[in-house]
Amino acid sequence: MTPIPAGERLAPVDEANLVLDHAGQVNVFLVAGVLAAGGFVGPDGVPDLTMVRAVVGERIAALPRLRRLAVRDGRRHRWAEVSPDLRHHIRLVAAVPGPAGLERLCGELMGVPLPRYRPLWELLLVPGANAVGVGMVLRVHHALADGLGAVSIVQHLFDPGGASTPETAPPPPAAAAGGRRDLCRVLRRAVVGGRRIRLTLTGREVGSTLLLGERSAHRGVAFLDADLAAVGAHARAVGATVNDALLSAVASGYRAALQTAGEGVPADLPVSVPVALQRRGSSGNHVGVMLVHLPLGEPDPARRLRLIAARTRSEKVEARQQGTLEFMRGPLGARILDRVAHRQHLVAGFVTDVPGPGRALQLAGAPVTDIWPVAVLAANVRLGVAAVSYDGRLRCSVHFDAASVPGTVFARAMAEEFVRLGGHPAADRPV
Image (tube, helix red, strand yellow):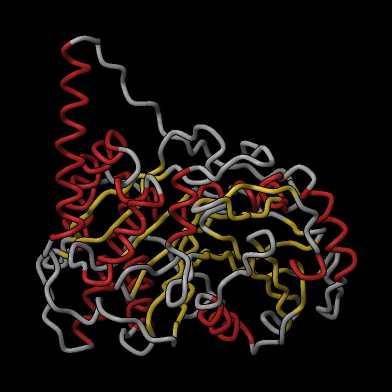
């Protein structure tokens, strides 16, 4: 990752992510996982904290981002170089009862802020999450990294072990021929940007629904996964991508959740999907946004997948040409967004998917057998889905307001759709 010079001001988009972190909205995402016995995890599942802190401490020497503290400088913040207290940043938490306990813990943590007086990350070790190992939860503030940045942090922090990550940076936009074409491109971006601003502020694409509204403090998280190669092969056969297949499974989740709640199922349901941009400078966030209308009214899985693929092909190009969402390009826009987003009816949910390590990782010698990302809920959105590819499987989580949304029904329907797409769920991970 690009180093952050000590004393440098936060990039505007990173500062915007600090603005969106406050009481009632914690802008911290996490990566949960399970570690098998080995390395710092004893055969009885007991972790050696001294050993893992020593190993991670060495890795942090090559990760300036994890040694930076955001200190106030007027209305903005600067990065200050510090030595993280690893007794705080890497610690043992109370034991949980199996995988379901790890899911509950993650749900609780999604409402817990990271202290601003320390570097904005922590690694929690969770006994009981596995019969012969230990659970882990890596929490990272969104001001430090977006989804791809988090994957990079994980790969630098954990043992290399031959792990590889697919090329994640999108191709740069095609250069215009200059002159009048340059002017046309600038004008088009301005027009599209203005339309996006109006849509964000006034769009009414989503009607009254349990998917939007004030969130309770009771969060739920459900993990599921599917065979990556099988899902990818099924998707490619109809001209789609793995991300399209994920969106099709998400559409099945929404259909089931709305039907269970007794709500009508709309023909289309718009969701916000991040799109990777070219990574430049020291910012931790390089993300555009595409609005994807999921065809919930299409019951046939094959036709639904083709529809989604056609929509994302055009939306992805436009999102990359437009770049970062206007309201997230700096703290002022983020403050405006923060004031109006709790009334938005433009999107019903968030779905994010990033390529991850193609082979298994280790943490201080302990094999990482499972890994799942959990994304932030923001504005008035009550459910979101995050996914990452890891060691041949597509690992997903559903993060939801457990007091308002039948999230377990959503996750079960997603898992069933993955089976139809050829990606059989793990035999030992019933949903």
